[in-house]
Length: 251
Image (cartoon, rainbow, N blue to C red; front, side):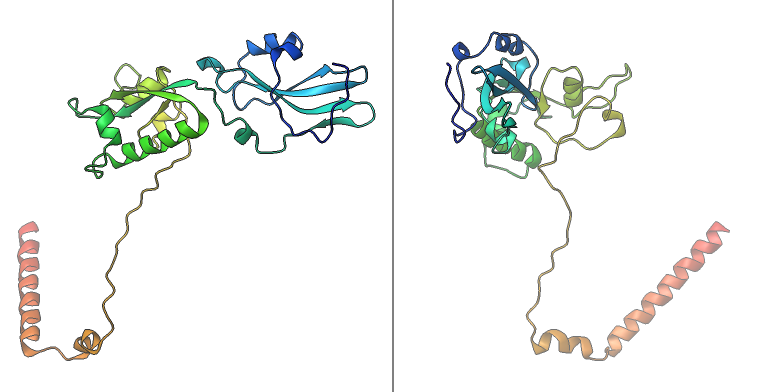
């Protein structure tokens, strides 16, 4: 193992436990998650150290401990250890860890799998089903599995001071994340963490633009007919009479 490291070597590269010091077995037992930022230096030769990046995609879900070479150190060049790409893109393989999630379905007779995957009646539970499709894409991209259970409530504070439904499952750590959207509420803030919303909901009015022809605007420039004026006068008289009766009644 006493050879120089090729400085042009493509990094990081996965190495086996047989080539690393025993300290990695100790690190393997620590809660190092996918967002960990831990580097380990171990002697590679008399004057040079190899720098390893160590992490676990999900240490509490039987994730696979992973280490990769990210650089080296020696007295002449100093500390040379950088991750050439985005850290989370390099760590996108979550080694098949299994997560638990929950979705809100108020009808107890609904088949959960059919409800989440069917393209029929997409207007029913649109947000839940959109979230389910998104998570399925993430499963394939990041290599993890998912167990989904159902609950009949989004999560509201009960008299005993705890939440029911989806928020209650998250509060008691029975699931890792929710697959149903939740509204921001102050009483939920202390017990759950909101992630980035992938469903943007807004209401808009859509008007059909008429064809610009002479008959479409000429009618607006014509004077009102006598019948229209008579109807306006009658409506004003009726409105004034109604207001007079209302004022007399209230007084």
